[in-house]
Image (cartoon, rainbow, N blue to C red; front, side):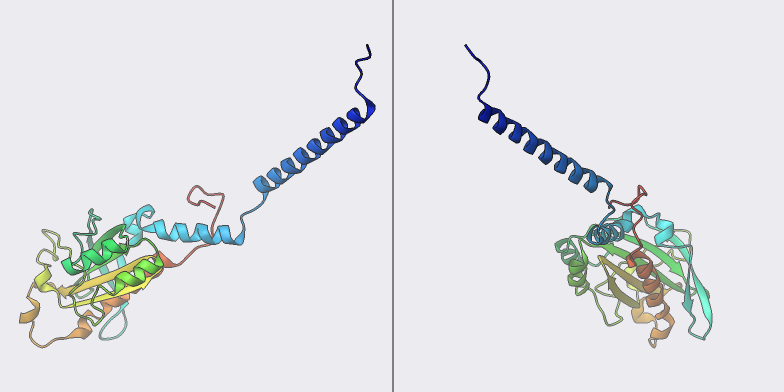
Length: 239
């Protein structure tokens, strides 16, 4: 009995084998191209956004809050504010006034970092707070929970350090505040005088002596929110 396959059957089988081989080759080539191609513009943009959003927890706190920050002095010229200390706590609920806590949580607050500075004349204290939100849209929404008129409340709670010039920096001492937003971050400030006098006992308001606090906030915010060109070969990046 002749067991050979009919000729048409062999032709069909050979054709199918050839098609499968070609398909496998094309798929392999496509996979190789995918593995060896560089990141697209969209992937680079997404990587940059992720890196910015994670800076609050991946950067050393000394980078977010440098030992000194420059500012324009009230009497003219340039001065530098000196950092007194950085809080180890990052809880969203411990760092702002109660009326703002709910708004931060609703906006997906990831953490709040705080540091206290003193001006060059050693008479004014400023606590700077970095609030990390879920994304830029939620940061914009959360901003409305804070006073944007120069008043300290509702706003950031001051950060005191025992045994330092900031020892008496309590909520009652606050005389000025600010809020700024860029990307997924808010940067808040609250300011008062070193002598610990309550705001209602400070006499005639002198808002100019606290104006430099906003400049400190802008510098911290600019560093945190300015994207960098991704380096996809570095472990710091996910492209």
